[in-house]
Image (tube, rainbow, N blue to C red; front, side, top):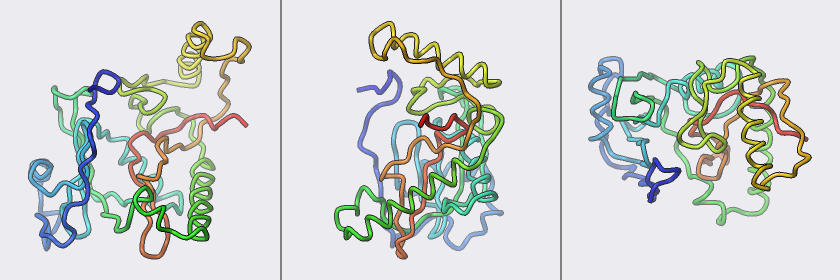
Length: 247
């Protein structure tokens, strides 16, 4: 079965043996070439795999995310998050892209980052007390508030790449060169929704006045609870600068 005509639905592979050995244990990352790292995407222990994206364990402390669904903008966003916020997210140690005509975007991307030790909320939520659940919800609310406090002038992913995610499908959209282009795209979609009675006829057109940082895929599987009950946010693939929600 294909999702949006492109990406096969499959159960993600996850959680390799945490006590096993990993290919870069005891090695200096700086001594490993990009070419050697790229080969590890198919030989290192897999901790997650879905569609065009694979995450492998490189060492006790490092993972690598790679494939046709990995763009340079994700690494750029993680760098911005590290430099301008207090949000707990993986730290990037290296990123690079290689041309790959077999992939939809024409490249395969690779990001080496911290391995975040903990449990995804979708696996541990039911075992937590109501008090802990409330504390986690408050943390997530603060994370969202801090993310959306940062405004950027250019819409979409950092670096001007195509937009993709829930609103854009796997085919992506853009890149948008400015506010007018993004407004026009959304208003075209709104017109189609009105025509097929999927939106009220009197819904006003979109008018964007600012763009804020947005994760676009905040879900329990992308929230890691560490041993200190602190929440880490992972998988920033769909992130970028987008209009804040209408209130």
